[in-house]
Length: 386
Ligand code: F0G
Image 1 (cartoon, protein in one colour):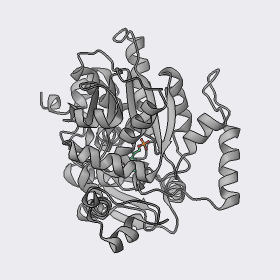
Image 2 (cartoon, helix red, strand yellow):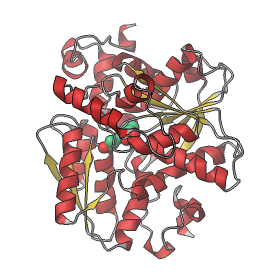
Image 3 (cartoon, protein in one colour):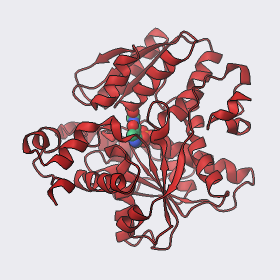
């Protein structure tokens, strides 16, 4: 069965919402769980204890394909033709690829913030022929806009507010478990932006436990960039939790009002996770509760340094992905992760997504560096300057 070539649909018995004949697939999810000892030593755990789940190997170069295949399948089931998203770049790249590479007549409409998208990702949207609309504002503004437009015009929304996206993204954890003989690691560490991935992972683990396929769940660590740290703030400072089935969303509303009052916008070199109003906040809090989770934040410098370690250790990734490694290192230093713990860091996107950030970091070219990275003039350049 050709569906077995998809790293998502070979788990279709755990995704029972679609008949096989409706499935929209481009062979996504053939990804790798790789032991990375150089990165283990950087993070501070014992050799053999750190693994990288490399989702950059997906057809569009990020983990988003896991969710897109499921959401496109649902869109096809309900007869949708026009599909839209707001994006920091990877969701839109995946959306554009699924529209152009499948024969079902989907038409892509993409909303991006101004100057907020890495060129590798924008290039994908444009080359695949998506209608690409740049708005005045950032991702949070684009997200609000696309929700209005999709609602008003009856366009199928492909952001991770779409629950079918999360269904597909659960399979990232199925593959991690499969590669670990269904013996869960101690920690899953994942960057947090719109919080779709972390929510999907929590749901995957909760369901596997309910099915009796897992006895013990891994702990979940969600890592924000310091310049886009809503979850960290709400979880660690405001003490917001999933409890009795409902978190107190007034805490989030209050925080958003304070950001607005001070004119604060999300701001990080990891543009993929430059998000202050995560649409899956509630689901993520539930995931954190199911998986005894922790939340932390890392600076842009920590992200870029970690990214270079990932690259020199074998696999490469984009800045947002390296937040997982930087976050694991921070949690190890704080004694939350132990040296003997088994840690899986999810590398969410491919190295070539954001080449400017990488070249600027390594080149020591002051102009490029200042232009791309040194927005606040605080970042140190990387390896080339050692
Ligand atoms: N890593 C990468 C490379 C991403 O592109 C994203 C999200 C995340 C991490 C965060 O994942 O939203 O599930 O918490 N990118 C979205 C986009 C927002 O539009 O491409 P999340």
